[in-house]
Length: 66
Image (cartoon, rainbow, N blue to C red):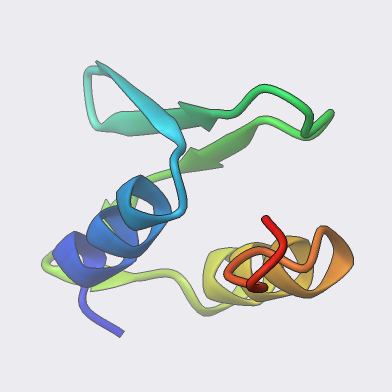
């Protein structure tokens, strides 16, 4: 997955983005976890994509009742 696409996905789900150097830090009210991602060139790291996927499933983000 491209890194900008992953950032765009998190923004779409209502996460707030803060950038510190190459680290993009995402937070959202009601979600305990802080997502800290960094790109490899223009790609997202595979384990970080999996972390985001697991959060989407855990909190049922994108569900109609969100």
